[in-house]
Image (cartoon, rainbow, N blue to C red; front, side, top):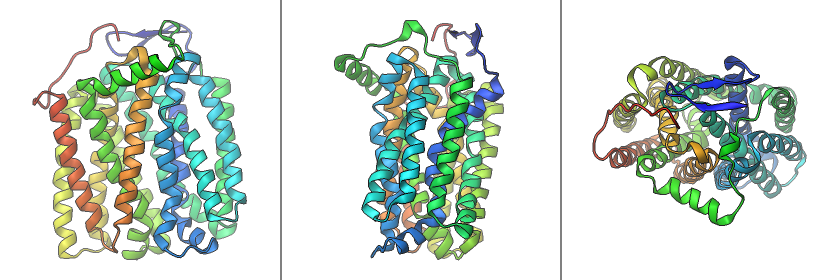
Length: 417
């Protein structure tokens, strides 16, 4: 059993069986299965479109877009179930579904069937995003949670580094269907790891009833809490711009800028930079505070997007695009972990419901925005960069609203969550 968080943000250990390093790795592995289902597909989108006879090349983006939209919409479900029955059972059901549906994707011969199965897979992976967020809030609070979330994100970012390269390697020797087979195998290994090593973290006194009224009340509380609103919607806007890049990255980097077979290496290099940024955040956030770090990063994100838009309109090549986009993505690392920690802080007793609402807003709204941005791809990076600049500006306005007009504050959290 695990005690509630203490004043320092850590927990009083009363028999938590897994050490911090393994705990961080397991949380990252669970969340990374969603990223794997997206990023491993990127090198294969063109081949999938050709094999399944698509007329419009942009339609292949739906393999990613449908997955993300369904994952976001389904994010409202697992939090309430996890608040009642615990985090671990929800995770194990999701992992089993991931295994079965990944194998089903490998067998399809029709693009519509592939999209349906990808949608179901996305729906079940929602639990793999929501439950780790709730588990982190069960164990930590405040800047300590932001630090741990950054460490999870740092390990998690290994997947975007290697997933496109894994997908490319599988395609070279076995074809795109075997990518889904590799996904199934990894999910089986992580399911065994979770079953054997992860303790239940839901505090018995925090269990909620499965009643529509109570569930809706909890969700309404999350959405109506001003201290969290700006960070929830701000994260969704920035995430939408990131999904827009992911949706069009193979066409933009691989085809427009001519990276070709080097696309997975370029994509992985950006992910490596983001992993490094998450490590930096884990080292500085307790000293400076999640608000100060994330507010500075959001302002820098807006500045980089503006500079990049000017260079794109003047004409740029791959080696101008990559460093500027990488700087923007690094700022997203500071924004993501810290916005999540700040927005979860008020909701210790309904961490599952709060995580569901936040994942829903971030993934569903982000996926919809990302799909729209991807559809506006015109063979240049300009639509993407305009969307990043607009998303950053709107996110800043939302954060200012939540903070009552005052940025860079440092808050100290009470002993009880």
